[in-house]
Length: 166
Image (cartoon, rainbow, N blue to C red; front, side, top):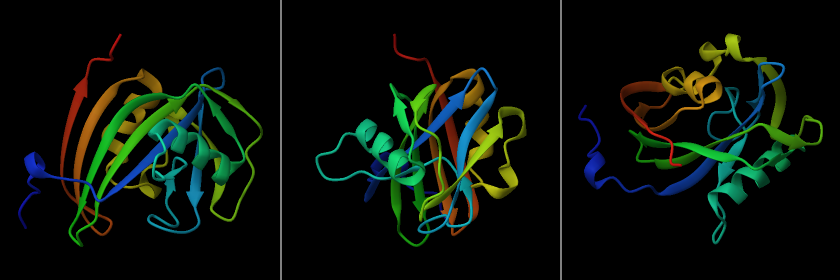
């Protein structure tokens, strides 16, 4: 199976992920997704960007909808480019926030999971997460990751770490 032509790749779906990090307790707010792409997996809250919506506004809105929590001043840390064998081309902006309002609650979409940063449950997450998530959450790194999937199976990956803009 050939790798995607990343030079000419164009996403068909634009989405976001947002990770709320409680730095004083060294933990991150994750979710167990109840429905949609990745149902049953552990991930950050997020979802599809609505027409006319910025990716930051989407990340905040989706976190409110999925957990009842409002992230304050999220910072973009990366981009995920996903090419699935079934044709789905998904671009995801990844955000990190250290301030929020509200207490996480279970919703129809997600179960909240405060998780120790040193114990990320990679075995229950998408296969790409082990390549970038800890570096974003703990070391505050910035990246672009390109991942080729066949269903849940990761076929190939390219990851570039980039200097944070001042």
